Image (cartoon, rainbow over all chains, first blue to last red):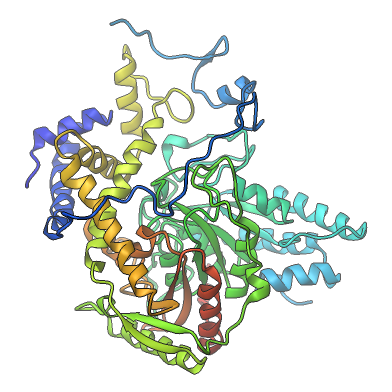
Length: 100
Length: 493
């Protein structure tokens, strides 16, 4: 199944990647070559097969229900969290004005 | 005095412990080698002070009679996918340029705790997506190898191309790698070194920039099988901060190494003998079979019937996970922000991601977004996950009649930079032998076998049962002892 230029443009919009006409010229044939390649999976009979959910089966663990169970991933690290922000103001991430 | 840069992990560690040389002398020798090898472009950031500080700590501990760690006095290269506290971590992408983590990844923290130091952050394919290190935003890594009678620059493999080039060039004794579909094994094979990807979950993923979380695994790349065993022992272990970390003890792989293969069955998968496979590759595979027989192993024919579907399944699953993982790069919390004049929030996201991601990363995000989108999810993603079940089932069935599997690591030797750049699919096909073990979460290693007709190294791959790194390493040692591979590229840099 071939993917149209309009579909690729829509996918790029969903993925929040700006693409101009030149970018699409390059991407559409590459995209279709890859999709054409992966579509050979259609010929595998999987009617009685479960999709793999975990490559090594194990139960999901819960951490201890206490504050700062692990100090590295707990709270109280606002300055560390903001240290690499392109724009941080008053202890928050700053973004352009949003009016909907 | 011996040239310290010619030594691997074990002789360096043991020499420091015995007082033959100091850790500072070792770090200084490698810092100099790194500085002299800028032409390889193996490093994105060099950290000579980190290596010296770690060395001084080891020398002081030794002087005080304190016990020394598994990696004491060994300076290493760190793939620039591991977050390192206070040291820029880029994943070789413009979108993370200037990102300075405020914490240390679990694997790197364990290595420093074991007495290792850091020579620098190694170049890689952008977000570990690539097989030639040509997708890096920081330029190509050049392999230290060259084909006979040629000056053409060769690919060091990928994605751990900085790691493989640096180890092969003897400017680091060992390096970390990560393997999603072959990113440790393929570059190791291309450069004549050893590398192991352990069972999925052995090494914590916490603090490693995520590509495809159900596949990503860290592992060591080094000059010998024993060095890989030592370093893996320092990297592995349960970590509650990684939800898929294996809660299992770390065996003493290095201490238990045993190249005696008597009583072991080695499986030879017939589906890996593909049409058009390079004659040198097939000859090296035959060498490997003869070597393991010589070590006492029994060789058995096995079948992995879904092998040809591994690569197409991988190129649905890995991009799907990548499209989700890379959604975090939005110009808000870290890294690049591109805010066009008068732009709103959505425009800022789209502009930032357009400017920050390279072409291969964009391709994979788009493929991943497509296969997960409403209406296509079952046809692509669910089908790929079912095929993944079949691929794992193939291996588990095969392991009823063998203990370890022997196959080539790659379908060809290293190719020239630029050769496959215009054809993403041709590049993907390089991982045809490495991807199946990744999809099944199995431990797998590449060991150098021989040189091909052009004088370039070829690797042999060993694949083991889940949690059975020991059998992989043991068979690797049996190969290494018989291959006696000691070639290195002629120094041209």
